[in-house]
Every structure is written in structure tokens, then in C-alpha cells.
Image (cartoon, rainbow, N blue to C red):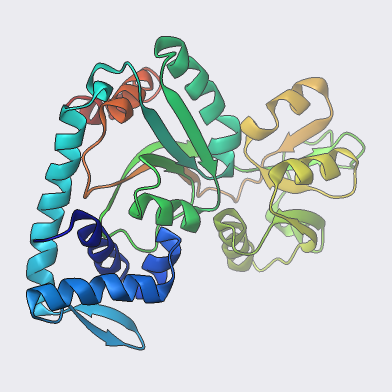
Length: 304
């Protein structure tokens, strides 16, 4: 008899095309993942994956099983939703994921509003870079996520654009540019900046922008935490690029100033992301419903 847990592991290896990536997403050893797949293969009497240095590719039998596994796992999730009190939204948990801008500056207000309506529900929020967030979605450690980064692999993931996010050059009140409204991209050449770490999608987005315009700002400091960057800019040690939602309070207090870069026409996009192998839980749908006044495009997802 097929084991649901082993089918979940099999589906994740199929999704990622890698035993290593599946193991990392599941917080398991690679050997443990391999053993679960071997048990499946032994029980079915056939190979499910063709292994190579490039990863794991489904065999014909594996493709057949994956097609059915998706249906089985989806039905199992629907059955679980149907027979629990979660349907009545009297108890349960919503597991949200987000990249730093959404997680630090948008989700807290959204969650506060949602919990006023559903005080008995627990809400957890994992804030991380895009890749770990996506891995958590694939391994079902998250129900839904909100990201600004681009997706390199979209198989089994669905997205819905919510809003465009403008980046502004942010300077402190003692910076020589503090009274300006804009600065040209050419003026950024050699200017000291603080930035996110190189693996950050925002950092990579900015690097591509600088490269297109042939400028090279002096990235003096790199941090994973946008709040640390913001504090450094307030102290006047450098400038940085951040969206306005992250500096609204400091702008109002006059601690920071925001300058537009006219050449920066391309925008980042805040997106809802979910694993399309699994149906939305009733709690997820309720949360999306709570956001429909702000994002009307969510209405089609919020309706069962």
C-alpha cells in the first residue's frame, strides 16, 4: 500500500529534481530521503528516478506515479480540511512566509487585522530570503507566501502579482543630497552605499540596474537585516536603496530623505505565491479574503 508520507517525499524530489534539495527542504538527511524513495521503488517493483550528476529525472513509471501522487495528496489535504474544526475557523494555524519587505512592513498589519476577526486562530510568520521561502512552500512548511524576488523555477508554484514596489535612494538628514528630490544614475558612480547581501534578490536586481547603466557605486557594507542598514544611513555613514514602506516613520520624523532615480523605471513586484499541488486551507482563504479590499485581484482565490 502506498504511504502518504513517502508520496510527499517522492513528490518533493520530483518537484525539485534533486534529492539534495528535497532533503534540505524537509530538514532530513539525503540518505533518509533516498531510503524512502528506495522503499517506494521496491514496493512498486520499478525505478522512479534516473539519477545523474545533474539531479534526479523522473522515469516513465515515475511520471505516471507523480501524476497520481498529485491527485492523492491534494485529495488528502481536502479531506483533512473537510473533517476538522478548521472549516469553522474556530481553531487552527496559518503559516505565512515572506521576504523582508513584506514580512517586516506589510504582514504585521495584515495579521493584526486578521486576528481581530479570528482571535482563536494562531498565525506564524517566517521571514527569509526568496529561495528559503520557496523551499518552505514546496515542503509544506508554509501555507502561502509573499515575495518581491523573481522565481527561477515556477513548476508547481503559482503566483499572483499584488503591487509594484518602487525603490528610492535613501539618505540621512546630514547627507549632502538630503534636500534634493532626485539624483541621476550617473551620480551614483563611486558613491558609498550600504546594501543587502549578494544572495538577496533586491541586491541582484540593483546590481543588474547599475550594470545596465555602466555605474559602480562603492558598496562599503553588506547586511542581511534592512533595519541595520537603515540605522547606518540615519547616522550618515552611507546611502542605500529601500522602498518607502520601510522608512515611512523616519521620513516623517525628518531622520531620512528619499530621492527618486529617474532612470529606475523597472519596479519590483510584490507577489502572492502558493504551492499549486495543494488546495488553500480554509484559514488561508479567510486570510486572503481579509486582503481583498486592498488587493481586489485576490477575490478569485478567496472564493472556494
